[in-house]
Amino acid sequence: MRKIVIAIDSFKGCLSSEALENSIEKGIRKVWKDGIICKLPIADGGEGTVEALTRALGGKKITCRVQGPLRSPVEAVYGWIPERQMAVIEMASASGLPLIPWAEGNVMRTTSYGTGQLIADALQHGCKHILLGIGGSATNDAGIGMLQALGFRFLDQQGKETGDGGSCLSQICQIDTSQVLPQLKTCDIEVATDVKNPFYGENGAAFVFAPQKGANQEQVKLLDDGLRSFAKLIQAKQGINVQDIAGAGAAGGLGGGCVAFLQAHLTPGIDKIKEYLNFDQLIHDADLIITGEGKVDQQTSQGKVVDGIIRSAQKYQIPVIILTGNCQEKNEEIDENPFVSCFSIHSAPVSFDEAIQPEYAAQQIERIAQMSCKLFRNGYEASILCKRKEL
Image 1 (cartoon, rainbow, N blue to C red):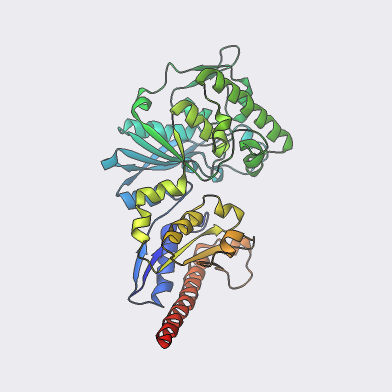
Image 2: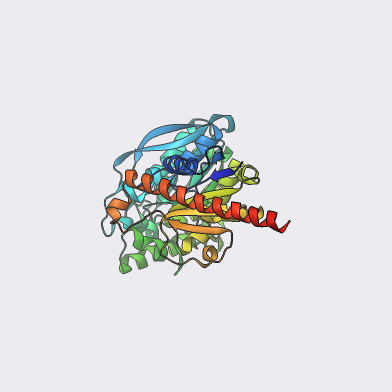
């Protein structure tokens, strides 16, 4: 009897991990009616992290009304695990790019304040441990908005509080910590990220991520200058060189802000979530793992869900099937791995608008899961038959 593990990331803007799991299970059942199917919620610190860990750890979701990236009110959700006194927070829920209209220059003034409000609410619940996933942000403010919501005050030369966004970073001359929430002292914060970018520079937060959030070349330069200025202040006031911290540039520099002011630890998101799920122990006797994400490209092998699952599967030489909406870009690590196969769920050319329709995607991934499992089954049975003939 076969054991098949399904551990797939959400297709952002289309289907949740749970919906994808259910569609894939239907496809598998058409091939193995009696197989053992193990559905494991998974994420890498971005969208789906709250869903994955609250499902796996028996938590609940808490909804808060907070200020979005442009200060408009939004409904944000975080996970609460009472037995562990632990909160699971997605930055994207309060400060994510989909929460604002696309417009050039927005990133100059977007704030992470709402993320800080979620942290503050968790602290009011008696939280002692926070896992903060920082994927999908709309901000480039080095986390100052988040920190303001937690009681930090950032002041200019005249002693006045600065405004919102990365455009204000170069104005900060003083940091007032007299009103910081005292609960922060007894709360351990882990920041889950899937990037290793430095705080500033050509590979830093502004140059790599700000264009994706609407910044033009001039604005990118201004944001980078602000990050450099703020890094000098952190070095002077906190004694920390954030530029030396891998991942400090994540979420527009919020990763560095968390380390400098919240004594947080940056951690690869997929590895931390696998640890919480006891993932390797659950898959060690599997015959096949099916995973996937919306797009497979070069970034897939830089700490995304698929990469983490492949690394775990290799320990036990378990074959992996990747299902994705787009695998046009070459990925040598996947292409050359003899235990990994990658399939697009599209059987014919479709427009982007059609491709992200949930009903269409669910039908297609069920069908491709069925076909790929049939291929795997036939190859497996053929190899067994050959071995018997040799004996």
